[in-house]
Image (tube, rainbow, N blue to C red; front, side, top):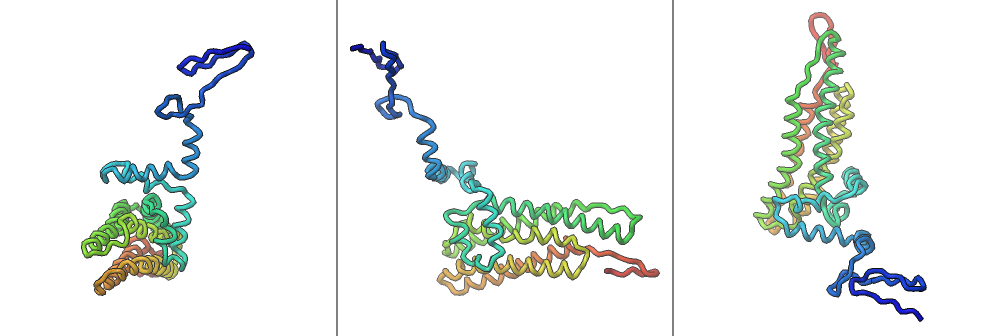
Length: 277
């Protein structure tokens, strides 16, 4: 019988009969090396790594990147589902169904950012087409000031307004939702304006009014259906009147979009006076 000596540092040695000895000890206090793939891949499959990241972010300050990292940890299919779900009548329980188990900031950020560029690009394209059809010999000059206006308007309404509303509700003792949920609801509510802004390139005024009305109705219904239950949970019944302010601000936003970005016309000159078509 052959004997093989095994040293304490777990090195592999071969005996006379090509026997091999290997240590299977994990990375515990007793020593040994850990298998870096098996346990971690299992944890990723079960979602443990994601939970660990959320706990680590929760212990970080709000001024650090790690604090916001969990709110951007979302896949594309989830974001798309949360976007088109805002167009359905069943979106009245959006917070408990589509934003469960946790809301995100990735979708709202890119929804608002995409809307900024679609507003400006669609408006500029439609205005240049209208200018060419009205006077082919004239040179159209793009108004880059509309881009800064769209940035200020969209981000103020989609981010600043829900944050201010959340602060006001917290001050009044209403804590049924978080600031991330408030921003998520407002950000996803603006999704319908992206296809509408593209379709408003159509040089037909009545069609643009109809499209703006549809976008206002869908996004307004979504906001009221999801914000009113939060207001109704307050002890003071007067808190429910805030929904009127929300509806008025949303109507003002829709009218502002129509006036600033969708008010282009084709002018056909007949005699000394031009008419709009």
